[in-house]
Length: 198
Image 1 (tube, rainbow, N blue to C red):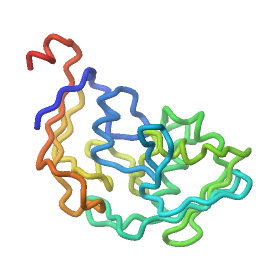
Image 2: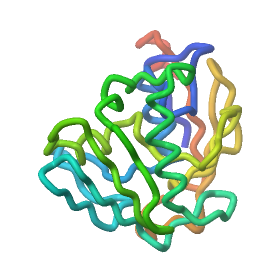
Image 3: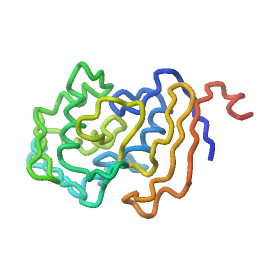
Image 4: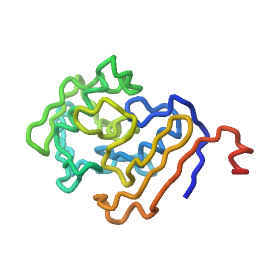
């Protein structure tokens, strides 16, 4: 399928922390998953997290699914989650969600598939925060985003900022009832008439 979004620029990104346009959001949710996802009522539902429990809404224990792999075959671990969360706090990253991440005092791996997050104040909506676009999970240590290696339903075959992306079906996606299309070509066409004509 070919799809046209309503925005595009050379600043298009597959770095979840830096997303700012609807095309970024659409593209990144093809390639990545979050710990939670927001349903049609904006309520958080478990995604990469198998469970999320809290003590007084300041100490959160997140247990991860054990059946998830990145597109390159690497299993999802607590280290990936810690890295994904904590990089938002680094001013050098330029995360659009830094203000939300500033509430995180600490995130640490307490087991291969378990992360403990400490907040600076109670926040019962922390699972909602984790379901927003910027908090999609990337591989531990990822610094380059010329392509995307996530856990999502599609793999990144091509990404050209301001031009297009091509996504191919992830045949080993952990949600067996998702990802039916073989390929998605995604472009941005800001002009509504041109987009409709295309």
